[in-house]
Image (cartoon, rainbow, N blue to C red):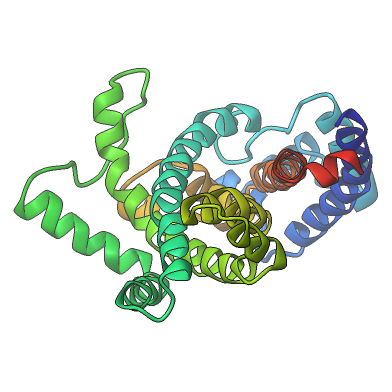
Length: 314
């Protein structure tokens, strides 16, 4: 296990270097000048030059890149050009919000998607499979922003069951925090559970037709043991990969849902930084997202070895 983790970390180093070069290069070609926005309406040449010198924007690109990498290695992601707040502080404020939303959304997706996929595979050709496929098709077709608006209208405005928007940290009021996150988590989990249902169904159908399942049935094993212990365990491999990828996408791409429900999360921070040409924030946020995907990939590899003993022995 230790060798696996060490090998994945070694492979991740050149990946991070390549990602950092791409991040730094692409954001430099964005239109507009952040210094002009920072200087205000007067745009005094002395002020513009002072700001460019302060943030080393007059240096050659390769010098700016290496200076940034050196600071990142020290744990310093820079200072926001717009708010003059350290990027690490902004990320520490916004990331837990989106992380809570992603965890709740993934919980609902797993709770619905995997059982439906198992039922659709076991009850192939029945009304259960038809209903599961109908749910998956609806979940993948309905836009998140439309579903969010409809839920706000019904659940919050008409019924008054949940808050329409806003965010409360769990440390302040755990119950109210769950209530404010419940609707956006359900909105995000709809498409996720649909994807999980389809992939679980496909993996289970393949597993149920395998030789080891026929052998287990021939030995007299009950259908419950055949499905859950033999078929599902082997079908979990592609599902684990999908879950880690979807969770990473949740952390990086819940922008529309956060905007609709007024959640000050990680995705909104990234979008605002791009529109404001806030280079330091864009670099820091995207770098954190890349590290997050690498960590999730490592978690998936570890789960593979726990699910499949053959990989562990190999």
